[in-house]
Structure formats: C-alpha cells, structure tokens
Image (cartoon, rainbow, N blue to C red):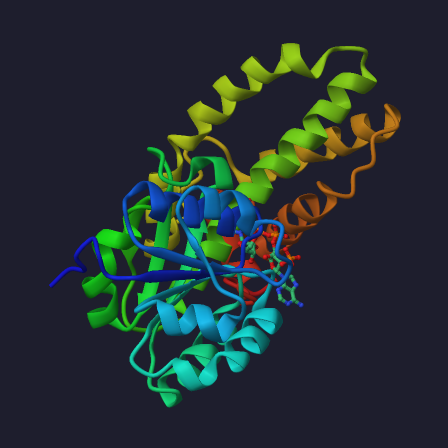
Amino acid sequence: MSAPRDRPVSVLGLGAMGRALAGALLAAGHPTTVWNRSPGPAVALAEAGADVAGSAAEATAAGELVVVCLLDDDVTRRVLEQAAPGLAGRTVVNLTNGTPEQARRLARWLVAQGARPVDGGIMAVPSMIGEPGAFVLYSGAQDAFLDWRDVLASFGDAHWLGTDPGQAAVHDLALLAAMYGMFGGFLHATAMIRAAGGPAGGFAPMATGWLTAMLGELPALAAAVDSGEHDADGSSLRMQAASFGNLLTASRDMGVDGGLMRPIRDLLDEAVARGHGDDGLSALVGLLRGGLVRPA
Ligand code: FVH
C-alpha cells in the first residue's frame, strides 16, 4: 500500500534542509504543515501553500507522516518530547544526522509512544532535494516505509536498508567518511598546488580525471576486503609507504601542514611493519578494525 497524495504530512525543522524537504512535499502536491523554533523560515513556505503550526505538538497532530530534520539528536529528542501526546499512530521519519545507537534509542522511544519509527540519512545537499542524483537511506519500521514510500520519493531515490533502525545511520556516516576522505585529500592537494604558485582552478580538472579513474578501483577493493585476499596488483603497500613519505616531506618543504595525511602514512608504515608490505591497500581495513591480520 502506498500513501495517496492527499494524506497530510508535517515537517519539524526548517533549517536549510528542512525547508528543501518541505518545498519538495509542496511541489509534489502533498498537504504540508511546517513548524520551526524560530518563525522566519516558515514565511516563504506559507506563501507556497504550507500550513504553519504554532508548536511541534500542533504540527504532529496535523500530519499522519511527520518528517523531522533538526540540528542533532539532542534537539530532535527534546522537540519530539514536546509533541509526545500526539505521536500515537503517526509515522515519524527522522532525517536528522545521528549515530546508529541514537537512531535505535529514538526508535525504541517512538514505539513506546505508539508511533512507527523510520530513520533516514540524506545523501544530498539542500539544492539537490527532489532533483536527479539525490538519494535517501531508510531503515526501521518496514510497513511504515512501504506505506509512505511514494511520498518520501519526493526527496530523492528512497533506499531501504532493513528493519534495524541503525542501518541508515551506519551507511550515511560511512558514505560521509568516504566523502570527507576525498575532500580532505583534494584540499591538501590544492594547498600544495597553491604553495607551488599554481591556481587550484587549473588543477581541478586534472584531479577530477585522476579521482574518476581511481573510483573504478572501488569494486575490486571491496571484493578484496570481503574475501581477505589482499592482492597488491602491482601496487604493494611497501611501495606506497615509500612514496607517501615523499608526499609528506614535499608538503613540509612547501609549508603545507601534513595533518590530514599523516594518519595514512602511519597506517601504511604500521602495515608494512606488521608484514603486509607485499599486500594491497585492502589489507589496511584489518588494521582499521583493530585486528592485526598478521603478527608483527
Ligand atoms: N545541509 C546539508 O547539507 C546536510 C545534508 C545532509 C543532511 N544534513 C543534516 O540535516 C539536519 C538539518 O540540517 P540543516 O542543514 O537543515 O541545518 P540548519 O540549517 O543548521 O538547521 C538546524 C535546524 O535545527 C533547529 N534547531 C537548532 N537548535 C534547536 C533547538 N534547541 N530547538 C529547536 N530547534 C532547533 C533550527 O531551528 P532555528 O535555529 O531555525 O530556530 C533549524 O530548524 C542535520 O542533522 C544535518 O546534519 C544536512
């Protein structure tokens, strides 16, 4: 069963992301009630057709589906507690960023209030909401997700990750780790280019080409992590540890701080010291998980 277009929905939290979510619901024709701690952000949404609630409890009472997008878990819990008497029978989809344990704790509390909890992780920035490329991860109460899937699709592709409410947060945070690793590397690279007198803008296409080529390595890397067969495929950890030292020495010589890169050098050096010099990059996952794959 999926929700028809005229079932009422509410959005709690009208920061940059909450406003984008509410806008997408309105654009898709859903009767939408909004609430925010400070009144300013609701004005434009009211002009676009939203009903503005005076309290979180009022907003929750108005919507069969309650979408929550607030600063953090602490704020979310406090806002939902204010609305607790009206939560019974509601589907609450929490799109606030948080940890897996926070998601599980909130889900238990929502079930105790008689609500159906779905936790979500938004893989988009506000301007991408409702546009191709945006996707949102969901886990928790499967019947509630299936019931509201078509409405949630207003935000972007909806990916279901199972009934453990923590799974959306696990995948959300893992994807953020991958993203920050890439951006951190690019920021260090541009600091080097600028220190050498070049423009970052001229370097960006070269970096894009290189990173795009390296993205093609991810499936093989993942397969090696799963199988435990850490084939170096011509790029051993011993070789990589040696050239990584050059990266840090050159950065220091140019006055570029190596803080973002040093942990990677340390990991490579430790892997080599523990006998993984002939292995490939996938062997590092064993060290990251605290397991020493081979005794030193
Ligand atoms: N924006 C993004 O790029 C990312 C994309 C991926 C998902 N994140 C997460 O979404 C949550 C909200 O993010 P946001 O961008 O909307 O954040 P802000 O614009 O800073 O809005 C924060 C809202 O939280 C309200 N708020 C803050 N403190 C309180 C409080 N004590 N009581 C009640 N509400 C509170 C704030 O209200 P106000 O300041 O406007 O009155 C905003 O509605 C977040 O988890 C991201 O990690 C966004």
